[in-house]
Image (cartoon, rainbow, N blue to C red; front, side):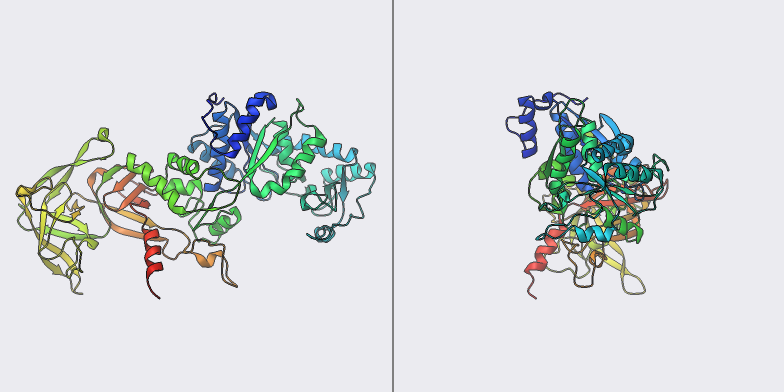
Length: 571
């Protein structure tokens, strides 16, 4: 059971306003019961996270209950793999369901409800083909026409429906339809299909059934059977609400006579990604990504592997709120949430992604010392650690220019910089390879500047991170970026698809990285801030002696800055 509700001074959004009013008025006996009803035909994505946070959050805030119910009415597309993954994702986000159900739990009651509709003359077995049904449905400006099978007798309909269940007919020969109004302006009320024949093995019921209820039939009746009070769903189901209400009214399912109320809210749309499970499955099946947990995917498992925390996702969902109107959320808001969370919790470490060797010529050969480094300046309790320093170091190749441009304040010949928590360093020369590329730097250090400050008060304009070459550990680092190169991947030029908008630079793998020795025992899932570079986590591919890191997010929103610069550049 969730914790009792303490009313806020003002409701946060329109859904909580409705729930608060209903609870105060005694509607549903003062109960609040919600549910999260995913179909197990794929992995959950960030859009589902919004629904999870809303349904479980409302139940928690109002002292109610929230069920997890799998709407498993389409056996051809569903799998136990997805069931297990969904459970894991919900728990990882920090929620626990009060009861676990499946629509397949109700297959027999749902069948009996369908029989009741037939008996009362509100449903019939239609033998039109799928194309013929579509032709009879009409258009937005023209009413539909009745099926020639609409006036079958109750007895004939009951007989055909029983034979459908017994497996006498192949797929597509018959469907059970509600008898409502073929002239309704709402297409969903023009005799919608309630059951179809599908000879497919179900992940729970096996081959017991060969007819399966349609989502629009199973969902409202499952809500009613579970005594759900507020059925929260996204806006695409708004036009389905009259059918939802028609079914729960005509079948009087709830034992106490109560009726669940469907309330629609705007789904989460993020730029630079797609949120359709069908399209996400296409990305997986066509090997555009490595799997559902590819860190470029908007799936919860992909975000988890990339290094996102459940706290950051919950915070993101809270910040964007619940609206009645569709809109597109900037990916930068999600990235801001994880930056803010990891800034407070992630240990700072030093890692060099593109190493350039530095030899400190006036540092004693064979000598090693340790410098003190603060683990997290945002968290005093995180303490400090010792990092080895020696004559030979690695710095980032991008931190050196032999011929520096104007306002380049990092290392170049004759210029002095600070090494993080160590010493001032001056470049005195370079060593080049056979191709004329800088392979090594010759530098001197000032022993009086230990800790990074000069006793004579001189200042430097740059502080560089580094690792000791003798102590560094090799690592692979995967630099992930946005999977699509345009903010609306669904918009494609003529003859193109969303796949043509894939960002070719969404992944760069660096295999010669060097990290400080404290990371030797870093476990998969551990998160760090690489000084000056961004936030990274240990990938599940990592093994002892073979570290692999994923970049979660850069320290700053480089993408937005790049877009702004491109927009300001004359063409």
